Amino acid sequence: MDKKELKIYTLDEICEYLNKPNPDKSERARFLREGFRCFGAGERGMGGLSRTAKFIPESIHILVSPVACQRHCDFDLKINGYTEGVYSLFLSEQEIVGGKVVEVLKKEILRLLQELSPQPKVITITVTCIDGLIRSDYAGLEQMLMKEYGIRFGVVEMFPILADNKVTHTDQFPHMVYGRIKTDPEKPKKKLVNLIGKIDPADPATDFYTVLRNAGYEVREIRQCKTLEEFDEMGEACLNVVLSYFNLHAAKMMEQKYKIPYFFWNQHMDFETIKSNYEELEKILGCSLNIENYYQQAKAKAEEVRRLAEGKTFAVGQRLDYIPVKAACDLTSIGFHITSVFVDKIDKKDLKYYEWLKTNSPNTKIYLAPDISMRTYMQNPEPVDIAVGGILTLKNVENLQTLNLPEEPYDFLTYCQVMDKLIEQLHPKEKNDIPNILSAEENIFARQWKVYPKGVV
Image 1 (cartoon, rainbow, N blue to C red):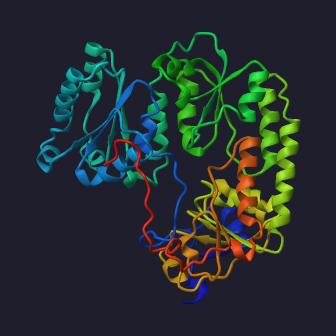
Image 2: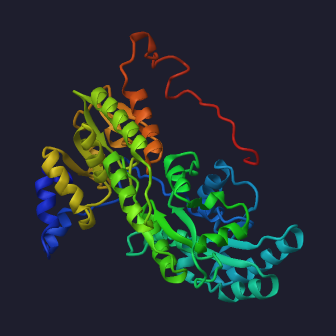
């Protein structure tokens, strides 16, 4: 296939297009995905809809949908250890068509409340696309639970059919979670900083917690709340530090509802940006944060990674960052030679990253990863030494090395942890250290036995 038929762009082309105030229809079409989404386009996860609802302490969660919609949610919850306080309500066609969803759910909740001891203080449910179409009204159920039982109620709307809306379902679920907080917004704020948007549990031993604690502030991430009272106390924080775009909608709600300002910290693979974030945080809080030693550690780690990356070419995929072109900028700043970036869409809000990359890595190519044409590209992809993050589209590249990294860092010690992962994987291997890919233990078709968490069947 002629490359012109593929959705591959130069940085000049993208910057020219995104700088146009009103591109015409044909120009827009050239930069949009066509056809069914290519299966070679992976995405970074955002933490799971139902899993995040279970972060609310002293709560139970109910999956309410046809059976087919529940399988991945139920498995996601249980494989991540959420086996207590999780229930499934399978809806029949008759219940859906007859508009009986709320009635059936109410009956099941009342039955649960008779059996559970202690009773939950919060009940959340996940509904799926079918509920988006029939528009069940849960207001009466919410009022009844609060009036008769003092139980809070919330709905996670998992509607992938609305994934391209201005406010998507992935924006709405943290909005629902933090919207369950009960507090008096007029109360004086505490020296408490909320950390919002972390996918993996936050480690209280990292520098973000340490330097703020030394400055007299407590940091709280939702999974550190053991009681509903501790969860409600998040509504008394003086600042929300937001780590991802998925949580900005919730932060704006909390600013309006609880009068908590927010700072979009944003996770970064760039130690200089982390330093800038700390400097801005000092201005917001009006305090001094002692970060110099942590900064120097991160800088030294980055230099070690830069030396190991010399002479190698890299592709950046969508599992590394919500904005892969931002990750490409960060890795370029370390010294990586980025030849290609696979993005989910060409978005004007990312223009600053494309322009930076155009100046600092002008030959980098941008691929529209979900486009149907990538299926053809997968048969004969351009060669690259190393893929950062999962890039199934490059599966046929000979001798391709893949770097698997944890969640993108937000402070210096989490940055050093990611750099250590890079160092471990980039470090030259002795010949005897390279496994025989044809051995039974390493064969990709061999079974890989793992132990499921307790309660998973």
